[in-house]
Amino acid sequence: MRQGVVVIGWVLCWSVAAAEPEAPVVEAPGAAPKSERLPHRGVFEDVVEVELSEVTQKDRVAPAYPKDALKQNIEGECQLHLIIGTTGRTEHVQVLACDPMFVEVSVNAAMETRFAPILVNGAPVRAAFDHKYKFRLSGAAYPPPPPPVFDPPLIFEAPPAPPDGKFRQFELFDLSCEPLTPVSVPEEARGAGGPSSCQMMLYIDAQGEVVHAAPLVCEEPFISAVQATKRPLVCEPVKRRGEAIAVKTAYTFQL
Image (cartoon, rainbow, N blue to C red; front, top):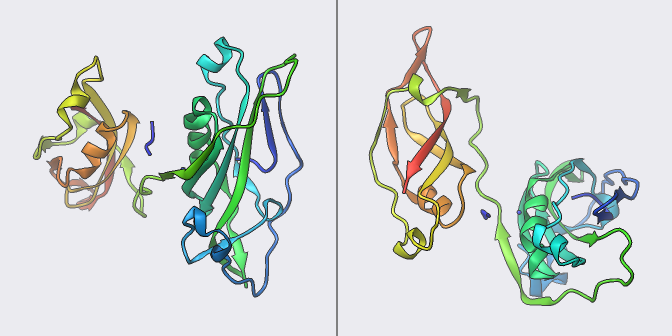
């Protein structure tokens, strides 16, 4: 999946996952955006480039070793360039060099990892840095060859974050909802034994409108198809103590 997005100095091994000691977040007073240093990566103008030593992970998500790579005794590495937002959430991943077998698991791990915000003059900023995942098998006799370089880099954008505010968890049978607009997916995506359903977490505001959809059990291109549907269903507002509230519920779209 993507959809479509780390620990500093990781070395991921099949037998042991080791990480270098974390470096504290270093505030850089007066630092200016330096995106002009990376024109070939398309880094946005409002991004400050930082060193790995200035980044601290809060919630580490380690990439799983791909099953096909294990079966074939393949080692490798992925060189990534990450952009994190002011909350520390990964927004943008560029794959600079990577064996294709390791791209998906590396991007997924980078997207799911959360970092401490980078501060400039006391204020959080969007920041960019390079990161590398290494996939090693215990007892390997030789190091893997250098990973193929992607020119231009592969680019992955994180899906929109859920809207701010509290959404109470509800089961679908506790809501009164009706499908409004059918989900339209390419015909070629329906064939070849592909999935026939897509389960999403729907965020529904106090007026009964779906304001956000996040994948639970779903893959592309179905995720994009569901998210592109402006009003997939409409629900009766949920009330508690006479006041309408925002809710979230799992919903399965039949494709």
